[in-house]
Length: 298
Image 1 (cartoon, one colour):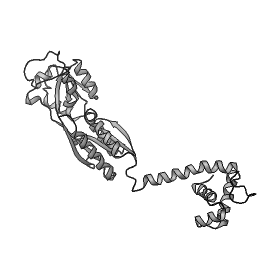
Image 2 (image 1 turned 135 degrees about the horizontal axis):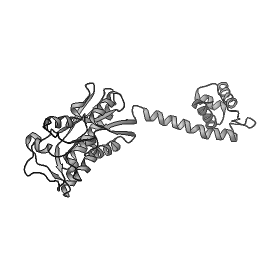
Image 3 (image 1 turned 180 degrees about the vertical axis):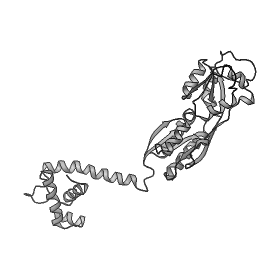
Image 4 (image 1 turned 60 degrees about the horizontal axis):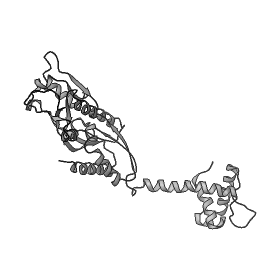
């Protein structure tokens, strides 16, 4: 029906007070301006200018058109400014994170991202690292904070954070005295990470699986649920140590002492993205993450 150039022409005719002055301003001929306005009036079925009067007088319909169309011009200018190379990162950034990060320093990182990139929109996914790796390859997310060992080969990875895994139990759980070895742990229900994760695979290697009855491994995809079940005495929970800090402080959980054979490897996390992502945005994410990690309680 009309385009933004039509709105610009009408606006200039009004601003300049006539067709001739607007033609000079827009570097067009007066006949080209007249033809454009006439064509616009014909397409819209309205009269924009009252040609019975001297000068560029808008009709009521013309005023209504210009008021609405001017918004498009302003919006066009804002879009151009927003996506220009000098505007900083603008757009939606799809971030995937492992749940451990949610319970440690995600809020601190996102707050800093918001302050440093005020025009960014964030879409957040919380998944296990194997799922995040596939989402990254499939272009379903732009960046992932995930287990460093599972970063896809084609991705760029920046090491960020190492988190200790510990065993926890409710104080009322009837556990033997002294450090527990893998066999002693296996005598109790164990709540752990979901199948397919590195901690689950490592736990299967460490526990004696050849005896009867086999260990009761309750795989859980939600660390929050693992914490809740451990606190309620359902079993011994394997959790990132920072997650249990508050419950330890108020006596709702106790750390389970274990032998070296039962101690699990630390979780190492990296920020990963495929080549081609905005370098400025990726650098800002890394800075925000490192600042948030630095501010974690010791």
